[in-house]
Structures are given as structure tokens and as C-alpha cells.
Amino acid sequence: MLAIVVATGNPGKLKEIQPYLADLNWTLTLKPPDLEVEETGETFLENARLKASQVAIATGQWAIADDSGLVVEALNGAPGVYSARYGKDDADRISRVLAELGSTPNRQAQFVCAIALARPNGEIALETEGVCRGEILQQPRGAGGFGYDPIFYEPTQGKTFAEMTPSQKARCSHRGIAFQMLTPKLRSLVLE
Ligand code: ITT
Image 1 (cartoon, rainbow, N blue to C red):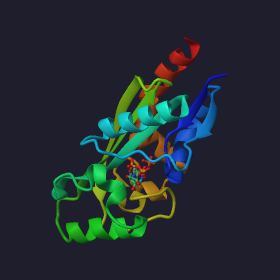
Image 2 (image 1 turned 30 degrees about the horizontal axis):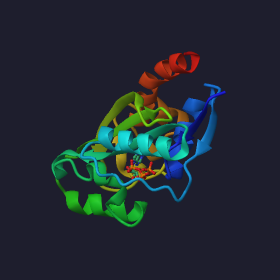
Image 3 (image 1 turned 135 degrees about the vertical axis):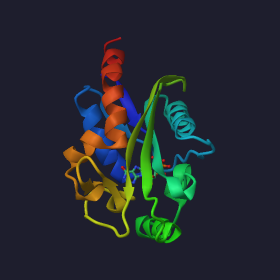
């Protein structure tokens, strides 16, 4: 059985990623907590590759990484790749986005999720990117999920990510879409 390190220190992400990998018959291990990768990339994909490669090399195992974030049109794409660093905690990051948007009528935004899978030597074996379009509400709504979920309204479901069940969010989210594309490829790789 193949062992794979899930290269994230974010418990919200980990909870969403685990079910996608569960039925592939891999032994999942967690990233050693003291292993920090500097996210110097300018794109989600560059940062996902960096995290997957460096964790694979450091552990000598296959590694999968997710780099994701919220891209707000009226904020010229912010917080973007800085989504995790936009404030001291989720509440602070949400307040900052709402304050910066103020009463701007353009509430268009998208969540982006890049996933990269690296071989034990650091070489990237697979990568993909999922996007989910939505709108930023004036106020947070819902108690589920993590991060910016309470202010991200997804119009096809008519709910914020934080108002969805985990399986509803998995069907339409940036991460769900990325994994829907990646899972068949992961399956063939496991059978290689
Ligand atoms: P790792 O790098 O250790 O995986 P991180 O939180 O630093 O954890 P990122 O650099 O990819 O990860 O930042 C992603 C941030 O974007 C995350 O901290 C959230 O604030 C936000 N984000 C990503 N996906 C999200 C989702 O599904 N719902 C809400 N917020 C999300």
C-alpha cells in the first residue's frame, strides 16, 4: 500500500481532503508540524507544487498539497495567494475583506484551489485547479466549513459555503471540483 503525506497544516482543508483519498487505499500521514514550506509562488499552482515537492523530499514519501484562496474582483484579486496571511485569524480576515469592499456593488469573487501531487523525489506527478464562482455577502452567514466560508455565497445552491453540509460543499466547491478532475488520474496512478 502506498503511503502519502497530506502536506497541509490547515485542519479545515485536511478534513475536506481526507475523504477524497480515503477510498484509494493509501495510508495517509500528516505533514510533520515543524516542516514549514515558504510560499514564495505568485500563483496557486506554483505554491501547491512548492509545498508538494518540498514535503515529498523532506519525508521521502509521496505528498499531496492544496494551495487555495479567495479572489475578489473589486479588490483586484486580493486576498488571492495571500488569503491565509490576510489577518491573524478567520474572523479578522473576514472583517478585512468586508471592510475593504465596503458598500461596493461589485461583489463578484471566486475561490481557487490548486492541487499538486509529488513523487518521493519531489517530481510533480499530477496537478489540477478548480474554481468556484460566487459573491461576497455584506455579512457572514452560517457556521460550517472554515476560513472565508461564511461570506462566500454560491448562487447555484443559494447558500454560503458555511451554510452547506460537507457533501453539498464538496459538490460545488473549488476543492471539490479540483478533486473531481484529479481522482480518476490518482486511481490510475495507484494501479501503475
Ligand atoms: P497549508 O498551506 O498548510 O495547506 P494554509 O491555510 O496556509 O494551509 P493556503 O496558503 O493555501 O493554506 O491558504 C488558503 C487560505 O484560503 C485558507 O487559510 C483560507 O483562509 C482560505 N480558503 C481556502 N479554501 C477555503 C475554503 O474552502 N473555504 C474557506 N476559506 C478557504
